Length: 398
Image 1: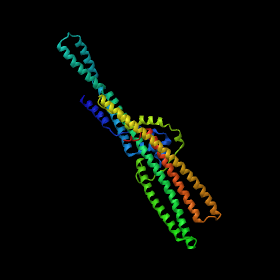
Image 2: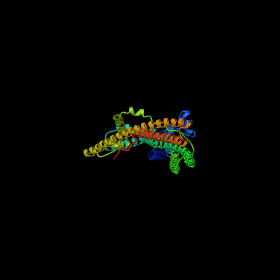
Image 3: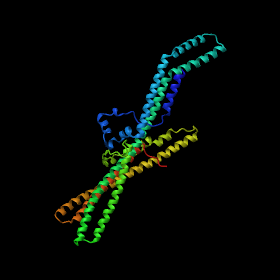
């Protein structure tokens, strides 16, 4: 008896001591063939971030392993204990004790009979508890593991939110780097053209100096953006399971869809956000004394938090609207720059523009293209901030 009681205690301790949150029971074999293959290739795509985090993020994959180990180890222990009980005479002993109890109950009442029945009932109850312990342990462990699963589900979502923002920022920086590389190329040509014109007496040295200044400024911006992009790339790789020096092919991020904003029901989303918010959930389930004052104070704090979250949701909605206006303006500016570029190309072919003037129009076009990408990124981030807040992932302002 001592042996299997000790095993039960160890199994329970293992389940209760496991504190790492974990997400789901999914393994690569649980995905369809196409999804599993995508997760194992050398491409990092925006739409597979959540699965990459679940399967390959170092901390989360370790938590998966711990959860699986606890589940399997407890199941093995319970099976061993159940087999031990089946092979023992515990059940027969309980039957014999119950038979003795009936015989004792048939005897005349006395102080000795009462005392003997109490001791016999205690023994029977204890034996039945030991026999049912494997089933109780399984239920208790399942409950603990389900709680751990829900905790990691929340952890994965939180990690996904941060990783999405990281990839969006990286995608924007990468686009800005490509834009500035083209601008540097054009400005180098512009500098050479300015020098040629100055040498021919068609321009002053001031034009050359300005071209040099523009080029140096752009090169400096380019170097800074490259460093930032490299840092973000390394962080993105680590969060999704690659080594810091790995070179996966990182895909692009889909453009924002401003039309979705028109379909938003702010009032309904606020109520959903209040129901999902982790801070408010904790406040609702927080234990407190049962005094009227304590209950009133807790309800008051919840009401204040709900009001603060309402204000935050309204702010996020306004930010989204503002970014949409700026995105529309950037798109308009880009279209104008595109038309100007086309006009400049035609005029240059007709020799109505100098090369320097033509290059200036091209630079303005690429700068407008970069501004459009940045505006789209800002809008996408604002829309995601709002969506995550609806799902409960936003801090309640204090």
